[in-house]
Amino acid sequence: MPWWSTYINPCYRSWVAAPTLTTTLKVIRYWEANIEKRKVYSVESLYSSQLENCSRETLIALVAAYAQLYLVLDGSWYLSVKERLGDEQAIDIDLQVWDKQVRKETEKLATLMDFRNRDVVSLMELSAIMPSATGSKGYIETENRNDCTLNITYCPIVKTLEKEGKGREKSQCEVICRLIMTNMALSFNPGIELKPIKLPPRQNQDDIYCRWQFKLKGAQ
Image (cartoon, rainbow, N blue to C red):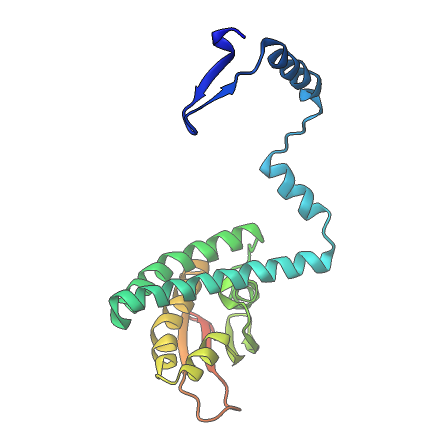
């Protein structure tokens, strides 16, 4: 056996048989014969094909799941900052994040859904499909198209904070939710004004969670 037919394996420090030229050529020929059978997919095509094959019900569930994960990420992020820096700084950073995020969210969805009419009723329609509203339940009272009251009868975030028992639901609505609602309205139409009518804490479990009035300046 020629000296070059063996070599030292650096991993095991032992002498092993080296691949022969014949074996190497067989591997190359096999690869050439089968390379055309290999399929390559782009991420974009896989994404599109998956969505196109979904039923209407599945697509609705998928959008809801995306929105829920959006809020789960927000909650996990906030708690991580709170554990490291304390509640005061966590709220301050959270406000900075939502100050930017809700503007982008409103503008992106309003453009995507082609909201050309920027009255208050249209804003209420947009708010119902925003990820930040996921899981909330309620109803809207309209005086006219530019004067509406949003009543929240269930809010998963406030419900969770109530169970925590530390009173954080008060600052959640007074500070964070107020910022979100205000920026949503101003991004949609700078002439829409926001007025909180009722905020937590709730008096009992049957009490409404919160109530907000959205009104266009100068509207009768």
